[in-house]
Image (tube, rainbow, N blue to C red; front, side, top):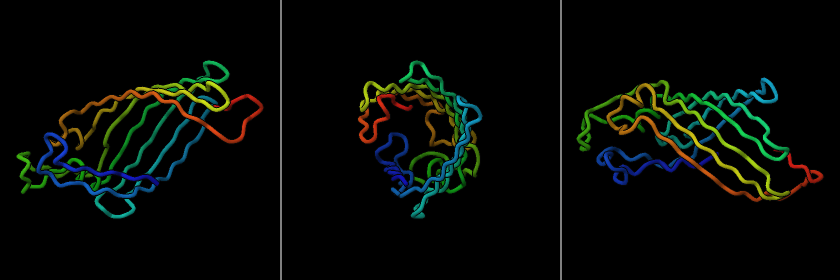
Length: 175
């Protein structure tokens, strides 16, 4: 479960006048399969559980993990997402009577985006873990064609420090 914060269109430059997207609770089902010790395939489906127009998203992922040291690993992955009509309409649609000034746009279901990313995880001690990564996403199909989409490519970089408590594994940390 996770909270989808929605969107207040008046807070997003260029989307003023479009309908807001209500916050909702999303449920997610996830499955993965290890092809080899380093290669993994995964799939997930996420659904708006409160029926607030959030629709459904599905993804298919492939990833590769490689140990760098006994306590650190590097990973690379790619993902393709697909969205139903309800999700695409709430995020990328423009109603005909919209005061936004954007031309009307009625998207259907289909591919939503493709992403690539890389990152690392390193255990600094029995409790502290350092992690970071970078990713890029390109919108596809209706999402890319929408007049509400200002940019079709986005990127992000993250770094973090986490504290783990609980069972220690003889001084050796599994990743």
